[in-house]
Image (cartoon, rainbow, N blue to C red; front, side, top):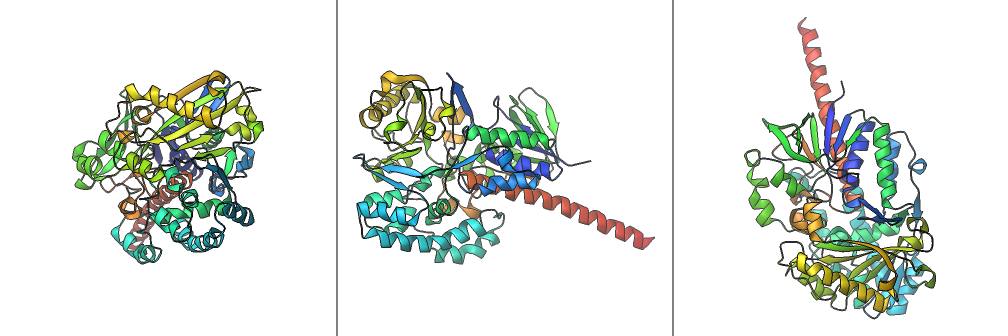
Length: 514
């Protein structure tokens, strides 16, 4: 009989590990609180529009290919990836833009438009970043950090690579122009970090994009979720929707299964949580089963959490793509950039200004909107719920300010052309996605919360409880959560190998005695 695995939550970490283990022959049962899969990658559909709720940037696409290959399939037969050029269009507060892609000559030309002296500095930056990428991603991203010795082993490399410096500080060694410093250091915001605090190890994200490109999933990211669901079901796995887990059942340091909100109990040999790690410990595991390392003190007092997000999804009956002003991915940086981020991350204060990510998928894929229409979402980083913002009172005025800003600067006559709209704020992340403090990306990616210092992929308190997703090692972002699924797959497979070895040794001993 195959071993049974329960996966809590169907974000990309949960879907990735479910597919990998199902391909190995495990009996995989995935329980999802919502009515369809995806977690943060949920899809909102209204008025003929499809809006990807969360991740829209596909990097390291081979990591998805590997999941299908492990199952003897081809990803291309399930879903199509489309390379983007440019990767991003980044605007300063005057509306002047910078494009970049994976063409060094093109990037050099863009840099010279701003500060010719920085073209050589950028080349030096890329040369040094390769070493960070080789160590941080190629070598360590899919390796577990379960023991302090794992951290001590790589500490000399982290010191050599100057991982104590922030991403912004690291970039500033090579780039003089302040806007270009922002262009090449914004990436930690994509995984919940402040570029002025996040370890320089995260500078590898820029190198990773240069290495494998930035892609879009035709049909939206939801099409990739649907492809993984189809693969899991083809492999014999089952996904239970509208099935909220309210307790992980623990006995003698082992997870025996889960209890759902309807009172039903489901048993398993292994339990994997793709739910937020702090939320899992605080809400699904009784305190008597948790050590000091995973106590309320750690999660409520000693852990730093990422910012949260306001996201406005809207469709228009006016087509804007043909004027060429906007690209697929647009980033609009505030004049008050560093102080804005300090307000959000440090002071937990909602600023009056904002930096925005404006997603316009119909530039690449008009089919996600009705004919003659345009689909958008605009995302603004905001403080998590550790701050005092009253979102019941502030949400509407904050929305109005963002939409007015877009109308005044990027999308003429926007408000009279919006035909459908919905919006989420930190309350959505806390209540619907079960993210502690409504953090958009769980645990903040700083050096003292990375590698061994980050929540581990296997619980220290419960021997067969594992974690995948943004809140565990190596961190948020699709390459990160997919790496966590590889780690957990291999940890669970190792227990089966160890069990088989023990049975073989027992058999040999029995035969010897006879």
